[in-house]
Image (cartoon, rainbow, N blue to C red; front, side, top):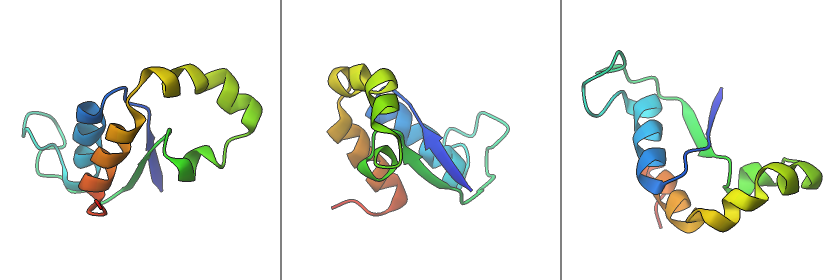
Length: 85
């Protein structure tokens, strides 16, 4: 199973990724202490985008890619997955 996030900021992407991998880091919700160990990516990561038809990318992702700080989002995702460079 793969969780694909579409969060608009690096902080929110990191929080949601951490939650589905290791459980709620704030210990405030129903996933507190529940490590699911799920694979997680962000919709704007190249590995995911490459699997989306160009027409769909243009229609649904183009504006987000311009408006959001994609590099920071990808950096946050790599940090949570332990693949930070």
